[in-house]
Length: 394
Image (cartoon, rainbow, N blue to C red; front, top):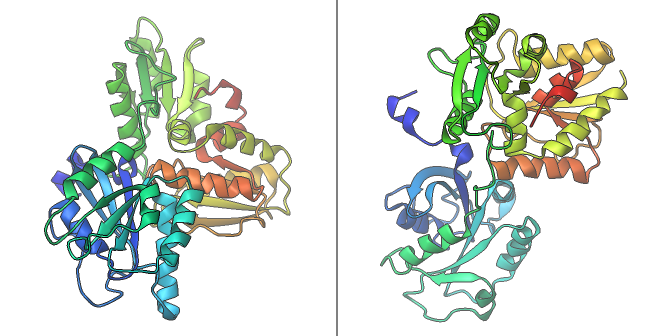
């Protein structure tokens, strides 16, 4: 990883701004105007933007965010249909939607269909009336939304649009990784085994995010590997108020955790930070009735080559087979590979989702709930299998 990337805010914690509209409505030009740089390829040829393009920027006064340039939702033909489907998938990750319309058009029936999709997901909508330097007329239907007349060519309305985006941003004041389990002045001990899955010379992302969150809350943070936990505990006059461990060593750490010290894991905390912890805990109860003839889906947010001891592809399947039976059917999907139909599965087990934004994680949870399929998370699953879920705080 280049050195400058170490100082960047991860995309998963940035506000995601989806840019939607017809082909050649001016989406890419508008993104370039917002970003104040040539981020998106601009061309008069319809269909220039194919797959969604993600651009991380700092947008004043919002801060770190991701602009998502999408293919036109009126793209036609077989390939166009595939592009439109990719555009629809972006909705699942969108915190704020900008609908770009061409002020010169008369028919907005396609826009109305996509507005309904965005409303269904309760996504704040801003209508950017583009090319308004060529037409001063604002369609009457636009006025029911937050809207602004813009011109990527002249820069008209761009500052107003940026301010409007900032006003629509989801508040993160009540969302914290450790805010409900650690207080200012608490001693929090982290147990972070540096196994084959940890990047050489670095901590994995959930560990880094948790440490930063604890420091923001003025906690006193120390960190050890699993084999040094017992020695570390002997150093302290008083036991730590909280121990946060890697879920894979939950049982080892639980045995050494002093009486009165709270216990949790990075994955459990991420489950609450990114998803719906109550749904995950409820989903874990399915393990009590899971049968060998059932089918389980394991979902990983990141795509990687599986290593020996990989938690999602090796360890969790081993735990499942040991608990339920060797013949249980297990599918593993990674990245954005998420089935539309989940009804063939008796249980979905998801990773902590550190590579996804909260909007997308909650969207996946919602799909499971709507289809009546229990979903849990790696950390909750492991705590349940190890018989210590009732000891875990979140």
